[in-house]
Length: 441
Image 1: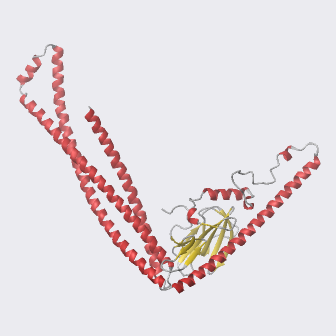
Image 2: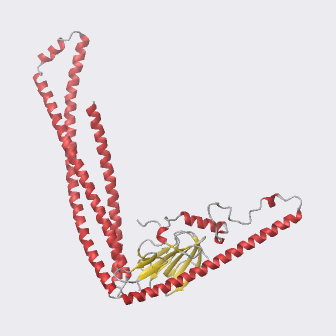
Image 3: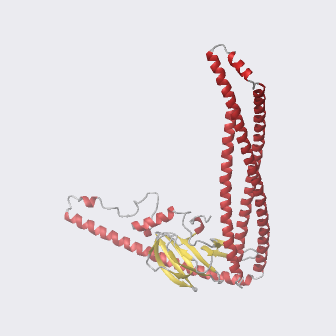
């Protein structure tokens, strides 16, 4: 009885382990497909940058991204190999156990057949029955003989099923070994490509070292564009704050005048409406744990700000494809002494790709900017900017939702497809967009 319970527990445990391993392997295979898809996009993008005769930092950024993703792919394949090794070990152990159980079943079945053969004569059968002490004992003996015969049949069926299960396990083991060999071959191919990518990266770095002057000129042009965009943000934010203050002052004045008029009508007994007048601070009572700015003096402004904050780390990407080639902050150019500063992120992608809004807001500004177009959108006390747009699909003053098509991406200073995405707060301080956008994969 205990052996049967232990066998059942073992089978359940083995089944759970196999199911978990299968699910994990499926997840790894899904991740591998996603990485392969992104690598295909990166290769296409890298080929486009190679067609540009100008030396480009995008080439280096893209190939570094390729190397990172290729390393992730190799690690993912390596995990699959380890899982297959564990699965093979488990299946080999199960096969060994099944063979031992099958041998034991065959031995027991053989003994029962020998016993039945030796006692096959009708005389032995009748002698066993008539030697019973009474009728009830005879019935029990008949029942025993029937159950003994059924037990032999059960043993035979168990042997057949165990043999079938053994053959299935052997087939699965063979399939696992073939899959492991195929996976190892794929890993070897990816390692070879990874070596090629690293050599290519070294070549690009060497080219950058030999063209510091050209790179320095590009960085100066980008810095001018960055300062111009920053000035536009500052002017717009300053204007929005001034307008909000004026509107709030007018609202409070109108409220005070209204209170004064009601007080003059009934000076001895304030009316119920006067008793429930909202505080002069207006928005200060909205939440005690949060300080509010003039840009949040209206319910709409507060709602947009809070929604924007609540979606930190979950904002949708402004483009469905592309790769970040310039990160937020100051970056050093590999192989050189040069540095560049970015108030947002630059996303490289084919010219004419769709650019979409990341949150609900209102379009405040659309302007030509060094051949491309700059768009600034207000989200309460937050502002997002889209630089290097080749065309726009919306107009100034328009209310937009998250996912609204804003326009098409254009070309950056070096002539390659990209656009810059920025986030600013009410103090005109740039914020790292990567901390607010949801992970790509």
